[in-house]
Length: 281
Image (tube, rainbow, N blue to C red; front, top):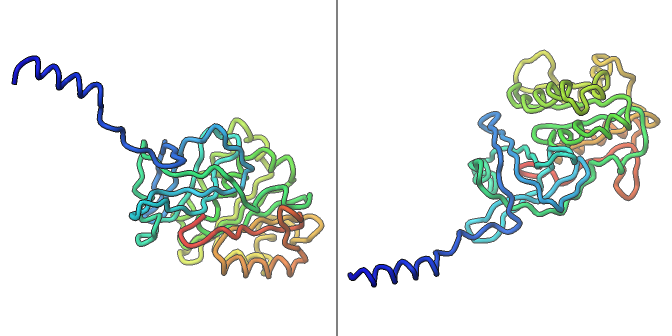
């Protein structure tokens, strides 16, 4: 091959570079990943500049499926509305259509994020009250991770109670560290002081605090432990996020206290996030 032919080929290569790797639709970049247990992980991604959301809402996120089509699930945004990035908290399901793939993401990877936030776990869906209760099982703590970091929560309520139940103590670590860091947070640390009550319990592993949320409410144990009065519709507001079975059981308990289920269109005493399904919100 002559020198002129080599130069010609080089010139052609520069003029016609290989096409760049196609980006996912509505792509955002993963900026951090943390694995809490072999079944739980959290991750942070870039936030679209146009995205505005209320703390407690969820968006659809996902990856491309094997069939070349987007595979999306509803995930609550765990970061507050003032955060420059978006955080999510997820379960790992080995044969789950999405999380079997999502659990392997790493910093620099892309995910699909549809920037249309919705949800019922927002302050506007509740009537004004004195105390706000966040009731969650497993990764259902995600929307409350957002709300607990939002100054508006402490401006609206005298007391904020986070009840979180998992099978084992290790599964509570995400919430425990979040609450611990909140007390030292420069932005709302002073607001949290004396207002935030954290009540983690386990159902399988023996720990200092055990029992299902429904049992601890019905028996009055949580009220006695925290020095708070029993729930009443005049002062208490509640947000619920868990499995369908959990939601049904908790609704019965709350209605036994006289609370009524509200919605964005009709604020009342408690709201339930119905998007929590299968692989997690």
